Image 1 (tube, rainbow, N blue to C red):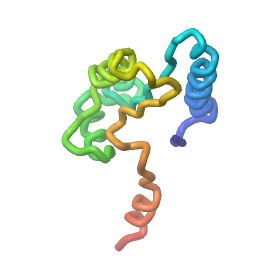
Image 2 (image 1 turned 135 degrees about the vertical axis):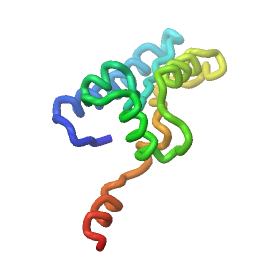
Image 3 (image 1 turned 90 degrees about the horizontal axis):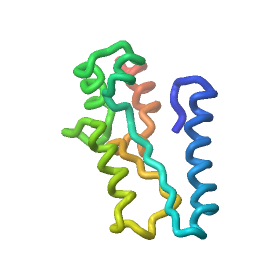
Length: 120
């Protein structure tokens, strides 16, 4: 999804999904499944450093911004999604982009943000 960042960053994210889809077609003939996982902002050391915030602050922002309340994105949750996609339980899933983001990508907060800005 679009985000307030550089064109190059956004393009690279979209390129990964395109590559996954292409590899799905190319490698399917060999019985190889190819999927992608799209995680949200997770309070990893790299992300905390990039944002200049500690884990508690990143988690606080996450809790406010995600649709799914009561859960915080964690690295282990993303890893478990990868294990799920690698398992035989989904052996006919290929070419999928699994959003592990608490419902974030199904919303567009722009209208509500603008409405709140102009509310008295």
